[in-house]
Amino acid sequence: MKELIKQAAEDLAAARNVVALTGAGISIESGIPPFRGKGGLWERFDPMEIAHIDTLMRDPAKVWKILVKEMKEIVDRARPNDGHKGLAKLEARDKLQTIITQNIDGLHQAAGNTDVIEFHGTFAWQRCMDCNKKYETRKVDISEIPPRCECGGILRPDAVFFGEIIPPEAMRRSRQAATDCDLMLVIGTSAVVQPAAMIPVIAKDNGAKIVEINPERTPLTDQISDYLIMGKAGEVMNRIVSDLQKII
Ligand code: OAD
Image (cartoon, rainbow, N blue to C red; front, side, top):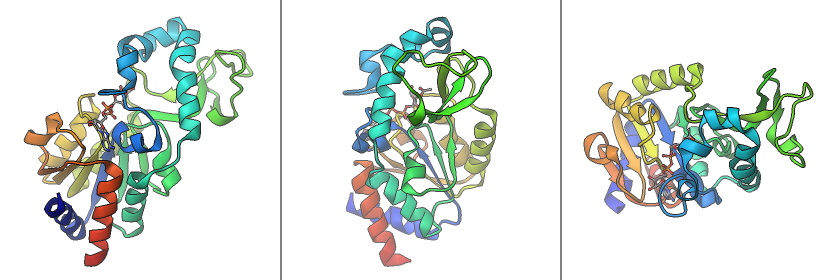
């Protein structure tokens, strides 16, 4: 791993435009469970049922009780870990332009990154299913479920459910960022959910180097990634930043 960490630091030092694509794996060390794999949310629930827009429309109280309330409690408590902080340090050294994240937990912004594209929306806000008025999640009273807007409509997370499209501006900006970068860090994503999994492919097609950080192999590993640093995001980012500091 030592050689690959050094390689990543050198690649970062040489890069002009770096973009990171992140997934649930980067937030595990902050206490947020992933979706797939051991301890993942989708071991307990069927995402096509509980995280599908049709279920939310048909039975919002069920989605709130089973999924949203628990996520609110977990996300409210979570703080950035060394993985998020490492990316913030890269931005501070002008070695990271943009983060495209599939996460809805807001931890990249909390760590200090300023250009974060929330590909699957955000959990920081709820919006009314009738009038679209937005409410900050941490201020929403959930003593009654589902919580309601002042107009009487039901509130839902401002996040993307299965069966919904990616917010068009997030889609447009992500494609652009992937096209323009010359190095993409792909951290903590299983890369099985589309269209997010296409982002590294777009970057690769446009000549970028792809560096994956993940304790497991993914569908990108053999086909798209230049190399995989097998490890946890927090530890790997700490070591990359430390090596980078010796070079620049
Ligand atoms: P997944 O839960 O599918 O994958 C998490 C990834 O993190 C796996 O590849 C793990 O090997 C890796 N991992 C585990 N521990 C790690 C650590 N400490 N550091 C780094 N990586 C680690 O999460 P996503 O790929 O983000 O979408 O899932 C994509 C989408 O599927 C989510 O945004 C969500 C979900 O259904 C929607 O809900 C629309």
